[in-house]
Amino acid sequence: MNGGEDYKAPRVPLYEGGTQYRHWRFSPEQLADTRASLNAVAVTGIRDAFEADLPGSSSQVSFLHAEEERLLVKLYVGKVTQLCGHFRFPDEVEATAMTYLKRFYLKNTVMDWHPKNVMLTALFLATKTTNHPISLDSYTARIPKTAPSDVLDLEFLVAQSLGFDFAVWHAHRALWGLWLDIQSLPDIPMDDLRRAYDTALTHVRASRLTDAEFVYTPSQIALACLFIASPALASAWLRSKSGQGGDDPALAILEPIRAMITTEGSPPNVEAVREVDRRLKLCKNPEKVPGSNAYNKRLAEKLRKADEKRLRKAEMIRKAMEDGDPFGSALAGQADLDDEDDDDE
Image 1: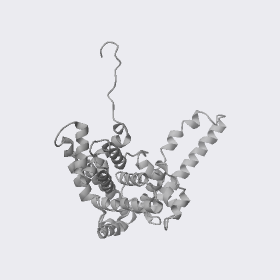
Image 2: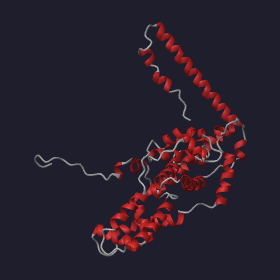
Image 3: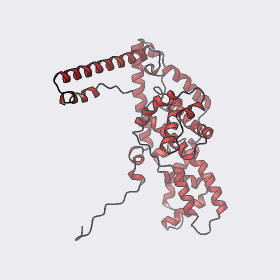
Image 4: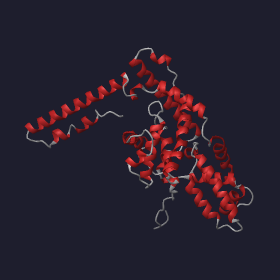
């Protein structure tokens, strides 16, 4: 630092200061490892639950692989679009719900929580976090065979799995920024720009079925989609920013994004997913299936711990009252001990 000059910290782009950049960015290899590890842990736990319920029963179960789980999730990510069309929700709600659903399954397995139920909760949560709320009764009334409890029972689990990171930076908003910026360039035919924007927006929506948002920034995805729609316009915009003639080096990063969107940005094969869903019915965690022996045992254990906790708390209150200090340290000192007994759902 020279003399009395004030030190100025380097400016961090807004996106890099957000939770999306800090908590939800991965390399393709990291994503694959995360899913494989999550699947392996889930299979081990569910196999143990089957064995505890009926020894030897797990040998007959064909558990899902990580890629099969991803295939099923992808189907329901696509169904978010259908539901949003039914409710006439805006693009912001649709994109946010898709992101929530994909993030949820980087922390959980479909063998514990079926994507259909999580999808409904993720969409309802997205209507609130994007400031387009709808009443729960109105929401569930328009979805066949859905009760309010089907949505609310999973809401905290979904929010917790997201790390309460509700804000999402989307590629469609970055694309809108490009559209506005390109209009300031000289000799840009507006009709060509409008057509390119509409086509690029279609590719942005297709990118939501892929892992693009976990690997690349929204602006990179938006530019890649514009490049697919109109290489000339994308190149012109890049040149206006870099001042370079010819091809800009930044174009190199667009190719893997383009490849991801064009090869993976379509709904999965329905027959393949139907087979995965059929097998899921046979390998679903029995502790999550109401009425199963494993579920009943887990519920009984949970109720037993809750009863013990209530009895301990009542005893502490009684003792504190006898000591003449009903709100004192003896009672407060045990609060942390009580919290340790709470079970995760």
